[in-house]
Length: 435
Image (cartoon, rainbow, N blue to C red; front, top):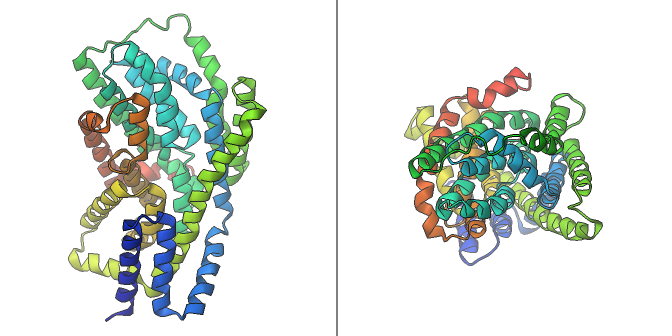
């Protein structure tokens, strides 16, 4: 029996058993990889190599951006920025059918593009919009579905921690190129949700309030400018070569902290709790990266990705079909697994196949993150689904039916992103970030 097949069998069966008995996923990945390593190395060699891979996997300057962007997102949640972005979103969406619903979507896109977190968007924006929507007799299940469906846009519109994780695993992929590549797919996701929400809102009689903001539009916009400027400062600084994506994350923290203090929403007494929450979230991501680096070494050493590639190519030589199979696998995986571990596990498997067919790593990165972002709003694991239901005070079974039309349009956008490379590559190419 081929040694690579034995290694793969040991690794995936042990990982499944560990997950089945309730072992945390980061520990399951590390232990199952260590067990697989003992098939090809003696015990002391496996211990030494595993320890080395943990340190090598974390020895990346780009990874410093993750704790800083998480901290910036936590400061935003406590800094009074969400309400100002919502007021700005009202200016954009007030003339559309279901203005409060449309405001929710635009605000999620704005907040997500600054915080980089879909869960934070669903909680912060949904927490403010839900009571207002109920007061105006919007169906709570429909409102929650809209909030849930639009919250993941922040995982694609930069800055995005998931894209940083992908860049680390993929190797020589520019974080800046990935950030730029995520803009159009993320905006298309949001626009698709807006179209479906507008159609349903019009059928239900949620009429646009064209004159409700008359006379105060300029005030609301000016009030939101400092919050919106964070996008200009962070992304503009990266593109202008003033600082790297990692340095931009630290600048985002300073900017958000100053803004929160100026808005009088963040006090010194709040900082210990915010920092502790950031440390907890960061430790999970970093530990997962450390564990997955062992798995990546085992798969590379035994050439498991090459065997999987050969299997797929023997099944079909059509890259279009191979991409469809990958999408189906990733969508299925996303239902049961958070995006970060899924990116860590499947990037080393699928990326070599895609590059073999000439697919750019930036395009593949956007495709995989888009796929796995969809998993955050699907049961049984979906963190944004649970957060949105809790914030909207509705049961999960009550929100699934209203979510179905949004799933349909998001899947359509996913197919467009998969098969139309320009959607991911146009901006990076125009800016000279990729060839």
